[in-house]
Image (cartoon, rainbow, N blue to C red; front, side):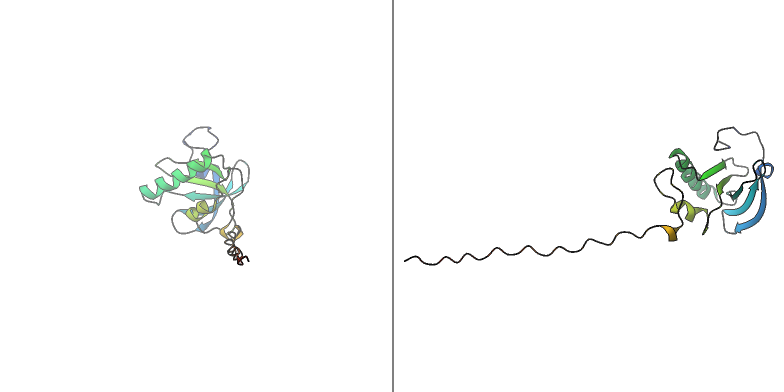
Length: 143
């Protein structure tokens, strides 16, 4: 699969589709801020080529699972062996592609949240007071 929108792979490299502006994340996978040539949209282009085969396969599996679940966060993907990449919108508070994938909601169609924006888990339920003891029945001797 070369593109999310299923237009097929025509052999075009990402350089024909995206103009790289600057490096956003140095560690692998490297992430660049880029502009989409055809539409001018600003995106993040995540280069997976520097990862070992196992790490690359794991990230691509997670990305494909998101796409299958209907998550629109992934704009484009090329998972060929030559120069695999994933394209997303610009991500606030970006700490790398793996961390961002971890922060995505499970429910399809929701916008991704940064870890700081996620609501805190609910507090544990308060302990219930012990049930009152039944009154001791004092049986008075009858006369």
